[in-house]
Structures are given as structure tokens and as C-alpha cells.
Image (cartoon, rainbow, N blue to C red; front, side):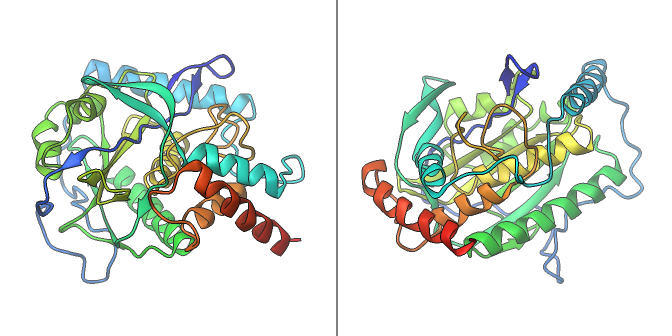
Length: 319
């Protein structure tokens, strides 16, 4: 996230393609949950280390930020309503801007905010999602986040028809909940999960500014238009609603909705922070992205007429 002119911060995420070697994703410690649920180490009985001065200050800062946003009537979780109408033409236009553009581009070892036209990208293989917590994350917070991510992953799976299995072994979509103190030692872990990861992606993960509330980095192999791995970073210092908002935006962007648009409403893919949780508009974007009539690798020009047809069907079907 970056400084803005309405709420002080604007909601953004990072979605970047990296070139990977064609090797298997190293397994995380432990085995899969036999019930198919998220099964991270919940830290039961751990004597958690006290937060550093920096981490404690961030927690205060983000708590005040959440309060400021709520006072302004932002971070809505109602999905949109009569005050946020949109047409099929608006939906199709927003889809092209959000799914066919990247929000960031790699400039040497740095990811810079710059909307850049791209191609349609999405998952064409099942997602094996794992949640990993830093040592300083409290047990009760871990339990809330596991439940939130599990329910939201099931929702994303229903919308996209991509199987999403929650696991602690052989994951290809990692969700890290880390405090500032936890993240310091994660570079080796990141390189283990994503062999050949670019330096710009490592820097984005390891050294986010205070204005970056959360991010996701999705990767393909050999430049393919399909995703093979993704890594999301959610700051553990966030209060509950801000953390949930990060989960909603980053996991949805990790499905292939890579950009934001100031015209998108009601939407979490808009830097005005009006909506904190996935909206009806955003659900339709996900359904469009994974419609069989669209194919990975399509350009905006190729996808636009098909997107208009799908949007018209979706809006017409809800009339």
C-alpha cells in the first residue's frame, strides 16, 4: 500500500511473474491434514517472544489506520448495494483493466508501481494452499486466520472452479502471516519455496515499507501464462478487519486479477479503500476470468469482445 489522498493509505498489492526452474516445490514440514483443512502449526503452548519496539509501533499505527478508515465509512463488507450500481459494460471494462494489466513492473531489483498491459493469466492446475505463521503470532490470532482463510479459499474455489486444497505439505500457494520480527529471517525460506525467484520479488517481500500492508507474488514457469506458485504476505501486526481485508484482496489477486482500477465499484480492486471484503462485482470478475471462453495468454484486444459477451450474460442472468 502507498500514500493516498483520501484515507492516508491506498490498498494495493503486488502481482509479478517470475521465471522458475522446472523443479518440484519443496515440501513444508509436517504432513497434510487428514480432514483436508488448513493444518499449520498453531503454536499451542508456545512462549511467544515479546514484540520488538518496531513491531509494537507498527501494531499501533495499523490499529489507528483501521479506526480512521472505519470512521470515514470505508472498509465496507456489505458487497455493494443500491448505492453502487454497475452495468455489464462497466463490468467488462473493469475486467480488462484489472485482469489484463499488471499493477507493478520489475525495474532491476525493484518492483515499481506502473500499470502495464499484459496477457490473461490464471491457474490451470489445482491449488494446494498452506498457511504459515511467524513465531510471534498469538495462538488465538492463528485460529481466527486459519478459519478465515479456509472459508475464503472455499469461496474462491466455488467462483473459479479451481480445486483449492488446504494442506501443510507440498503447497504451491503459500500464505505467510508474519510480524516484522518474523519476516527478517524468511529470505532463505522464500528462496526454498520459489527456486530462482527474482531479486525484485525478494526485495518486495523482505523489505516492504510501512505503507505496504500486504502483497502477493504469483509465478509462472518459463514465462507461461499460467501460474504454478504464489506467495502472499499478510502483516501480523494488523487488527482483525484490516488483516481480513488483506486476505481477501491478496488471495483474489493471486488468482489472476492483477491490477486495480479507480473506476471499479463496488470492488476491492480500487485504491480508495471503500470496500474491504470481496464484493458481488468482484465475484463476477473471478467468474469471468475462469470462463472457458477465455484462454491464458490472450491479449486485451482478444479478450475484450468475449469479456463483453460474458458480462452481458452474467448481468442479464441476475436481472
